[in-house]
Amino acid sequence: MNIPEGYQAVMPYLIVNDAPGFIAFLKKVFDGTEKMRELRDDHKIMHAEVVINGSVIMLADATEAYPPKTSGMFVYVDDVDKVYELALKEGCHSLMPPANKEYGRAAGFNDVYGNTWWPVTP
Image (cartoon, rainbow, N blue to C red; front, side, top):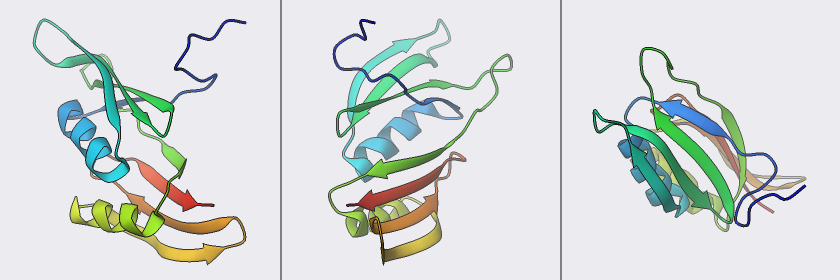
């Protein structure tokens, strides 16, 4: 199997309302880097990719044919407390404040796009 360089075997593909806003959220909260963006004729995002710590999240704007498809994600981060605070400042709803667990320092929150995030600092 030849997975293209810069991609992993499993990648989330999220369909959201306001994909540009979601990209801005990923950049601000997770220090994500936008890898690419392709627009449809109506100037909505047909396909975009954001890299977080070497992992790609693919996404698109929702349409009538493709309604929002959200997910829950477990994400390793350098500083879970910082990510959690940034997320709350961006309007996220807390599920679990940062706490020490057997697998690392972890937190949980729902974003305004319908996704659940579980950031962890090992």
